[in-house]
Every structure is written in structure tokens, then in C-alpha cells.
Image (cartoon, rainbow, N blue to C red):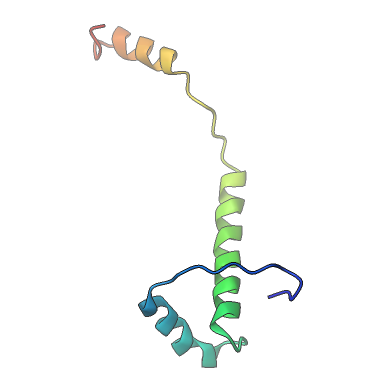
Length: 76
């Protein structure tokens, strides 16, 4: 973790911290906080990369209702 970054305390279940501590000897990190930061950054990078390529377009609710009505699903 970069020393110039501000830290924030977040509570984690003890079972997660214990698993991280068990893995530390097999990693390049000395502290659980460093390893947890790395893992979260990797996961977030993957999620952000996936959502970056989403062709998500907001849905017009009126259009959806109109289509459902024309198909007989709505009786409004």
C-alpha cells in the first residue's frame, strides 16, 4: 500500500482475516492489509473492465409497458 494514501478502517469477519493470515506465507506480502488491498484491487479491476464493455442502455419504462400491453400481458 502506498504510504501517502489515507487509510480507512473497515470491519471484516474474523474468518476472512484468518484465511488471509493463513495465505500470507505463500505471498509476497507481509501484512494482511497489504494482501487484502491487492486482492480487492484485482477484483475491482476485473469488474470495472467487464462493466466498461457493457452496452447497457437505460430502458424506457413507457416503451416496456406499451410492449407488454400489446402482447396481452398488461390490461391497463
